[in-house]
Structure formats: structure tokens, C-alpha cells
Length: 107
Image 1 (cartoon, rainbow, N blue to C red):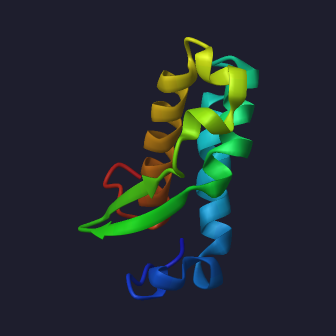
Image 2 (image 1 turned 180 degrees about the horizontal axis):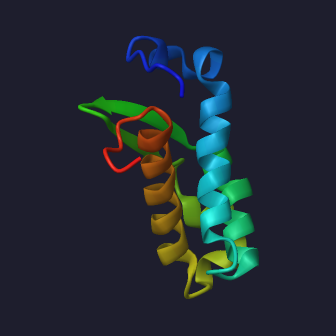
Image 3 (image 1 turned 120 degrees about the vertical axis):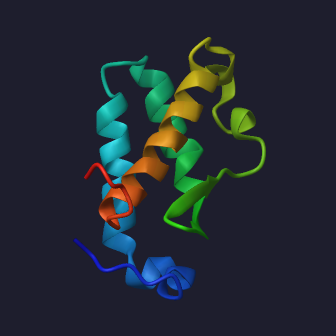
């Protein structure tokens, strides 16, 4: 696994691009098949592609979403699964970042 340096995470796309891709991809794969694929795909491509992960300290990560995520996905926002999928996706990404950078004690 990659050794984590909080200072390097300030320039995450320079130092940790592959790890970020891995976290987002793993989160997508975990949710694939559990939720409507159109909702999952819209959130992935139109909301999370513009999200920003942050290191909060103490092994915790936070994913900040762009403004008005529902407006970014159009009619998909009206789907009953939109909010649950968005929340689950963000939670999984944060968990994956903890796992990848070895903050997850169960890893």
C-alpha cells in the first residue's frame, strides 16, 4: 500500500492520483448491481467527477460534493434511489480511502 503523507494530500492529484482513482472505482464496483445503474452512473459521471476528497486528520476522509448535485443529474434526481445512492457512494469512497491508505483497522 501507499504510505500516506497528509502534507502531500494537499496536492492529491499530483501525489495520489492512482489511489484516488482506485477508491472511486472500488466504491462504484461495490454499489454496482445493488442500485439502479442509471442512477449510479449519473452520480458517478455528473456529481462525483466534480467532487473533492479531503483528509480531515486522524485517518478520516471527507468527500465534498459540488454545489447542487441534484441539478447536475436532471431527471435522475427525482428517482427514489438518488439520495440513498449518493450517500452510499460518498460513504464507500471515504471508506476506500481509509483502506487504501491503511487507516482502516479491519484491512
